[in-house]
Amino acid sequence: MAFALPAGVRSVAIASRAASPLELGLMRDPRPLGVAIRAVEVWKGKTLRDLSAAEPALSEGFHGYEPEDDLRWTNGMAVLPQALFDGLTGPLTLQVQLAGTAQYRLEPGDMRLDAVA
Image (cartoon, rainbow, N blue to C red; front, side, top):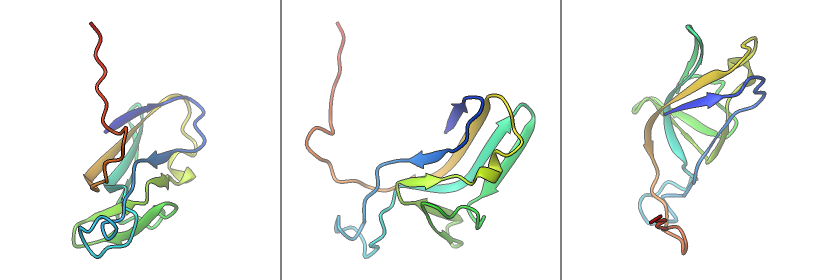
């Protein structure tokens, strides 16, 4: 997934729904799981900065690295480290390589169909 970031970005968080597989009766994992990340990349023209899922700097809002699957789950609100953006000016492109998402309970109002005639 790629996202255009405006010039002067100071903080970026990967926000998603999150659910505990234990509460959903799917697994014994009690952690709130958002999305599973393999890598995060920031591009400024041809300049690339990247962090793999194994990078310890992915900490705030991230669960521990899972080497057997080479991924790191978010908790639904994962803040990317500021060092990833330091010294980069102007608009940027953020690319997030996902390994998967969690299953979520369907709440009333979650499904919607908008149609325009």
